[in-house]
Image 1 (cartoon, one colour):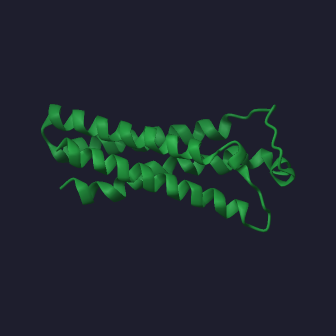
Image 2: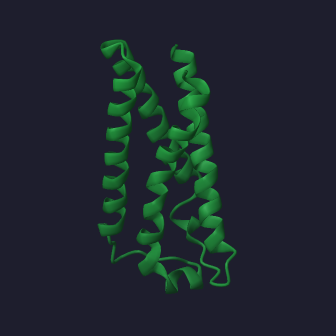
Image 3: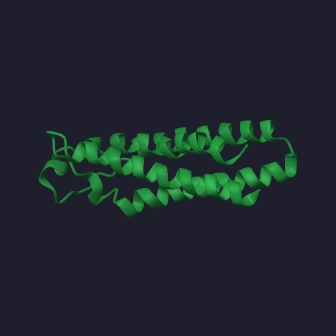
Length: 138
């Protein structure tokens, strides 16, 4: 049982990281040429998604062992995961650093939008978990 839950968390983490990298690449290769990977590096995006994904699978495993009911466990984990992702998105949006500096000239021009562009990344691990959970956990 733990192996299936672990692989659900791991695959959703990796998929969420790939989507996050693709999301930032859209801004990098758009006509604006805004490259925020200086602050939100690929390693940061991978570690953020791994942290959320593996925490989710650990929480799911603990709750399934305690409650012994899959539908209640899924609801609680989904509810908590949604709440955490909204909280993280709000923290990203309201965490304004006046000292934020980018070496890329285009990124420096759009640095005020950095945290607003970063906010949707908090939803990628959640969406990935909801996508991969049915594949691994029946």
